[in-house]
Image (cartoon, rainbow, N blue to C red):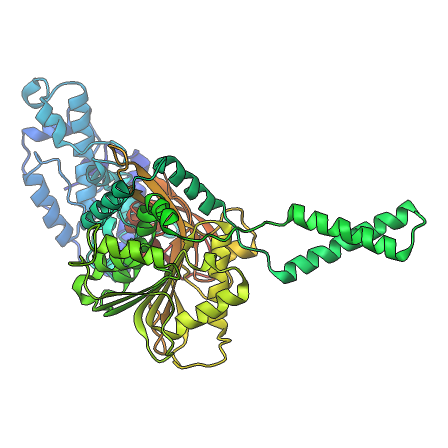
Length: 607
């Protein structure tokens, strides 16, 4: 088969000669066996597709034919009515021969002529791969993209040393099956880095129990007051530490002292000191945030149930789902929920691990909240037949430091503690009671993020006075490193937070789809080295919304080297598998990062 009949219609005459020369050189250097093929029998398809324009082509030198590829060409030539192309491992002559066939076939269909000169039917039009953008016709478009530029695709079959003087060819993937190292047989939309959940709904027993309790209480203006409580909890800030107040007072004192000296008023020292003190205290009262302490009685507990039950459950189950997804062998048998509130942590844990959990210890300082949580477990009534068994409510943590739990959870609890020292003491106590994983969840505000980073830094430094468990802490999620948070270093306006969609309680006739913005931290007990080791790539966390654009995806990644990077993932530079994984990922998922020192913004070419 002459190469002129293969690609003569799609390449200039001078290009054909150069192409044949490169192929002959490749055959001689690689010592590949090549034979002269037999001329295949011509059929009416030659006239219909290849010679439809009735232009005569001049005879050209035959390109060397390789036996294995020639066998594929013969098979495809005998079944040329099929316009579907096998994209698994296309040979270079399959690419060249079918390119001419598809291009002429499309031209015939666009002109409205098909077999025997009749107008093409709808079925004939759909036989050819479409040129639609990524979407429902994604697979078909990929088949056509393999046929694009047959000269470059054919040259990629040889080593760069052979074709280096001909053109600069960038290979997208070295081996098509290297993706198994990361995908592990999963489809791209379910690659191992996907940890997000779809829209979360409350368990049916929990939702029915909550509605029963709220309707029985008959709280006035429930919806409006619940929205106000939600806004208040979101805008709430930490109380300023005494050291920060002293620093502000010293700065204000110097400011007012300099102002009095410039005014040159003749006043005594005592009067001057009293005036400055009065001005400093007045300014501190005006500029200092006054934190309100909430006392969760029965009425406030009902408002909290209407406002935060569904959102808190969505954030907790999203954080716990990462443990279940990335560590499927971990099956907890005991749970400690610090600041349990309405018991959202127990419900979320039971949804993921079911009856494997044999003990739930829920600790909350409010007795009224514990009573409401017990009613929810009992279906809105007393706990005669609870939905979840073996749930125990306490108002104080267990005293013994030797008692440990497989899973320790503190959701929206650390922000209720007033001072930094009290928070650190609570964190050290929770860590001593952790056997496998410690999960901390807070609001996705700057204060919530900073509270979690304080806990992270304190645990990694290991400044506990008494250590009962020698296993060191390791950051499991969301950080992919144990360095300082890059968003805190750069003082980013947007904290490190994530979103989870959920359906709210149907207080009215319809449920609303809302989003919960939260920050979380998971610390694990590492046995020597429990960190995940990957050959050729590290994991990066998507810390912003993924922007899907035509032919590329814009991602913001927190990398294993502690840097925030903006990456544009394309199929050409990063491979089709990497491109599909990035396109199917979302905010909060993990993506593989390629080990390469000279280009920090390049994502792994080979999954």
